[in-house]
Structure formats: C-alpha cells, structure tokens
Amino acid sequence: MTTYLELHKKQWPKRMKILRACVELEGATSDFLRQVFKLKDSSITFGMSTKALSFEHKLNLMLDLASITSDDRKRFQMLQEMRNQFAHNDACISYEIYFMLAKKSPDKLFAWYPVPTKGTLEQRLEKVITLWLKDLDRIRRNAERMIGSRLLASTREKMNTAALHVHRAKRTEFYDRFEDRKSYNGEEVKAIVSEIFRDIERESGRAMDVAIQKELRGEE
Image 1 (spheres, rainbow, N blue to C red):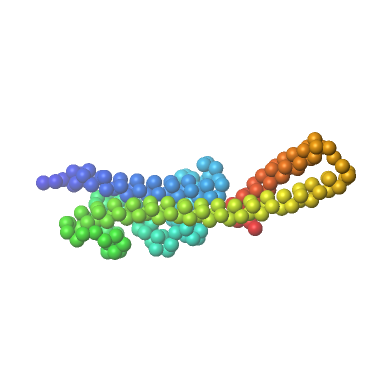
Image 2: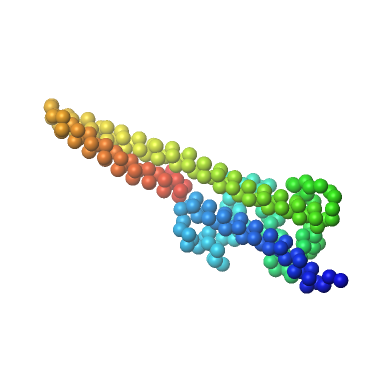
C-alpha cells in the first residue's frame, strides 16, 4: 500500500511545476516593467523583496497598460490561487486535490483548453495545465511586444519632431551666417557647413534623448 509520504514525494514535480511557472512569469514581468519605466535592476517597486509590488499588482499594471485583456487577467489569477495552495498547504499534493481543497471546479480550464475526455481526472488535468502554462507565457510575450511596439512608435514620432525643430532652427542660423558677408572662399563655406552639421547632430541627439525620457515618464 502506498503511504502518504510516498504519494507526497511522487506528486512533488506537480507542485514544483506550478511554483516554477509562477516564479518565472513574475520575474519576466518584473524585468519587462523595469525596462518600460527605465528603472535599474535594483528597483524596489519591481524587485523581489517584500517591499516590491505583488505579482497581482504587476498584472493589474499590465491590464492598465492595455497589454493584457480582462480574460487574460483571469487566467493569471487562477495561477496565483493555485500557487498559494501548493506553496502553503502541505495537503495539496495533486491537481485534483487542489480543486477539492480550493472548492473550485476545473471546468473553466477545460473550457479554455479542451483536452480529450479519456483517462482519469488527474491525467486530464495534467494535460490541460500544461497547455494553460504555455498559454500564460504566450500572453506575457505578446504583452511585451505590444507595449514595446507602442512605446517605440510613440517615441520615434517624438524623436523625429524634436530633431525637425533643431533642423529648422539651424537652417535659419545657416542663412544668417552667410548673410554676414557677401563672399566666401571654398574652405570657409566647407567649415561653416561642417560646423552647422555637427551642431545639428549634437543638438538633435540631445532633443531626441529628452523626447525619449518624456515619453517614458508619460509627459507630452
């Protein structure tokens, strides 16, 4: 007869599968949000200390950024709930027992990710949870691409606008410089043109840097 300890040991990989998925998803989400807000790796808000935002708050932020849908959020919410049971409840030694302890039905998972009905409930849950965890990672990656593309497009537009203002200002300066005298030799013209272009490159870079920082701070 299988003892409780042997059963507990046998089911350990299932516990670790949920815990690992949660840790990896939260870590990847924190890394991405630090990049979005240009924060250092030592960020308290998106770090892993007790002072950091919870995974739930990070997901809510992704929802506010319109990078995940409310339906996506529900799928992540289920992972958080399952993680809590597997992390803190020693009696939670299988997927079937999790749903019993949580007094929840797995029907929603089966509706999201249909699997064949043959086999035991635990076998079906193993298949559906594998599909579910893969989908959560897909959702996270899509969210990152969506925000990244949106940020890039908006920043690029502001960078181009900032650079254009510099070019217009320098074009006026270029004409003013040539109006100072009626004639120039070739070397003098070359020197003025080179100086103007160096100024444009330098000041455009500064203007674009400012545009990027304003975009990241959400300023107009």
